[in-house]
Length: 390
Image (cartoon, rainbow, N blue to C red; front, side):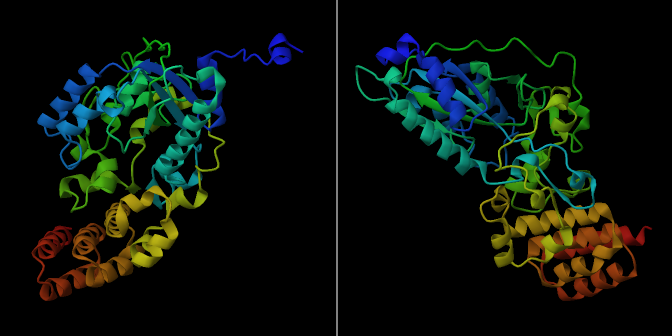
């Protein structure tokens, strides 16, 4: 028996306590940085907003960035930021190459926002109760954030040494690659910061030409308006026609720039049961298109898919079916053209134009005579034109 066990002395340093408790709470990576302002990252974010690259995200404002890059504003008396990483990589799946609708790997399970916040709350409680972290000047203060909060999560992760910025805008960990969910705890604990990593992507730029919509407009610069993840999740209107064909069969998010990244070649699958649900690796597109709103809610409740909403996922299913050009989908698309919302009908018309055939043409011609929706009428006109050119 050691002296610490005999006399009840805790031999762990505060940092060792934090690392251990973070791992016990269910996180895979832990790093620490100071609570100074993120001045450089603030200016970069401001430029992205000024250049229109964040258009479509009305909540991503300069005021939000201003607050999120000032830890003292988020927590008066802030001294340190505990940066956390959670591995969500479920491994490869045969479904990813099938004719089903593809889902980004982080979404193949439970909504990570709730999961991570619950774990961070537990971690903060454990930290506040640990003898090695007791403060003589008062209680432990802490606020915790994931990517729906104002803090620039990737900036905090990079400064803490959790990873480095990849040219696709993701944070790359030398241990887990980019299959990471990030969280931060801003605290009044005075902790020794870790060093940021000197590693970079070097000459590698495989992610840039691999993006089918050309959303990575320069190294480290992503045009949010062209990103498939934005288009399938955050964007609530009609998807620009010029981008639809490049979206393939992605119906929620996109992993292409991560799949080609060499850093991810040795990625280890997570053992966390909250990720990698087989029923979410690929979605039956016709079933997705045909669901009622109630059926959609029942099927996807508690998953990230709820962010895209029922009509958004129907829209995405139409685009994916149009890109597959499988005539077996024609009856479902005709049904959508005749009965669904205006948004879904627009994309069903586009898909029928891509698939073609006599049935699709007759349905489009009939719909052109019965609809009084200008947006739907225009999509029908263009779809009939595409069929007529064949």
